[in-house]
Amino acid sequence: MTLHDTYTLHTSYIDRYGVSVNPIVNRYTRLVGIDHPIVQEGLGPFRTPKLAAAVSNAGGLGTVSMPGMPADIEAGARTFREHIEECASLTDRHFAVNIPVGVDGNGVVLPFTDVYIRMVLDARSADSALATQLTVLTTSAGFPGDYIDMIRDAGMIHQHKVGSTRQAVKAADAGVDVVIAAGFEMGGHAPSKAVHSYVLIPSVTEAVDVPVLLTGGARDGRSLASALAMGADGVAMGTRFIASTANSDWHPGYIQAILDANEGDDVAFDGVYGPCRGLRNTASMKLTDHRSTAGEVLDAVELTRWKIESMQRAQTHGDVEDGLVLTGQVASAIHDVIDIAEFVPSMASEAADILRGLTASLPEPSPVLL
Image (cartoon, rainbow, N blue to C red; front, side, top):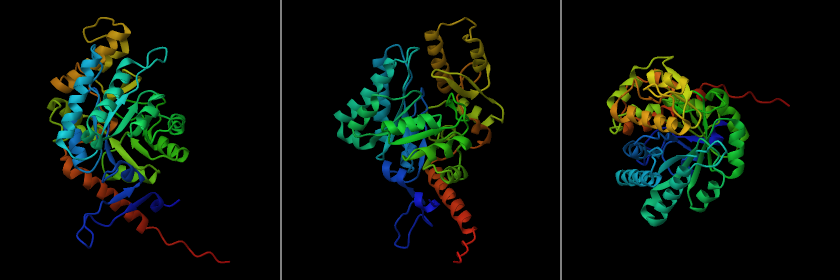
């Protein structure tokens, strides 16, 4: 298989007839109906409707994140739906939602997962206009099991995030449409297998036939080009999009903490569903003792709730010392706040230029003499 068997590169945004042409077209962009193979990661438990709409408007795929696990799950579902409707009002393009599949100690799916997935499907069923926009559902954390058929029967494209080749094969065999392969350097909840993107992506793309997205470490056109060269169909990014002008729902202090991060300032700690990556601070260090920032020992339920509240406190109030600041290792390479409308198409164009330049530099194969 050659590079051009998996994607098509166009030479410019405008063809000779004056028609706009997207620089990279492949099976993923065609499946999802987007211009560029660039996805905004789920960033729960934070508010992301404006950010999601900005990414979708720019030709990528934005994602509305689930709003956490409040004690009143039905209230959480109503908040989630409000975020979805807000995103739909800000874009006429396709967008996604992200819902983690949480399980208890016995492997039983937690109530919030079921309530949130059913809310999304019911919302689409009740609103045909919304159904034309909200077309992708991404699951993460745990295996989606019975929800795979439910999501497919509702007519949605199902993406599932994995952290190992075995998980990718299991998800693809079960019928998911897209696999998101998560390298351990990613921000937020990271895979327990702790395999980094450069090792994981080629293994996953060799093992499954469905489209694969890289998540973990991507930040520009070079990242996208390298992902495509490893056989992936696109990239998903969280940290890069957090530091953007469209992200007005997040406290400036959180964004500044990302801009100030250096190599080695991140740490993996025990999150809600497993390992979680964020900045090294008082809150993340407290988790090594399973204590809250007040010093008291918490039981499992209280600790989980404290973690989510701590994450949200950093995002909404800018408490970047006693709040959990989720971010990937790529934060150390991010030094500017981007305009998403300009960034997304420019990133795709940069990747296409890189790949075109690399293929042009290769010598023509010598003829085989018989």
